[in-house]
Amino acid sequence: MKKFIVALFSVVALFMFMGTGAFAAENDHAEILQKIDETNVKIEAEIQTAQGKGDQLLATLSLETAKLDAKLENARLNGASDADVANIEQEIKKKKAELTEKYNQDLDKLIDDLISKTNKMTADMIEEAAEAGIQAECSWVYVQIADRWVWVDPIQIVGV
Image (cartoon, rainbow, N blue to C red):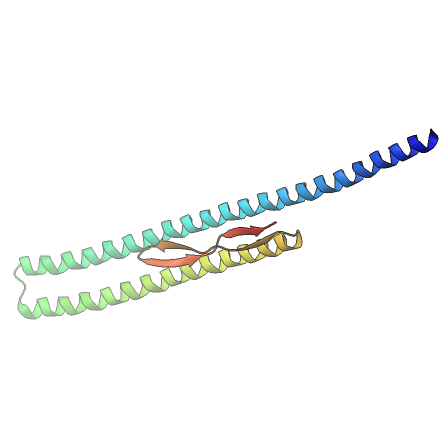
């Protein structure tokens, strides 16, 4: 009878230890999966922030360009000479080129910063997931920032 009780307790103890390990692994996966979701939310927030800033850059360019066009139209309506209109046109063309160049530089920097930041967030999280035994990868999404479309990389779980 003692052997039976010892065997019974041994089996119960074995199942308890095995079950605890399984639950711990499941909890570890749940924690990493939660972190992946949080990282994706942060990436989405970064995208939305960049979109807002890009829209503001584009709006500023459009407003400044419209002001320059209005200046030229006012000169024509006020009877400026052809020579004056030609000079104003040249001046406006030069200012529009400068504004467009600055806009492109600012937008390039905004997009580069977004991609660098999200790539790092994704790479770090994929590495952390791999250490926990979860296979994840980039799942590229195409997003619009001002007047450009770019690929950004949220995380997709491939296997657990």
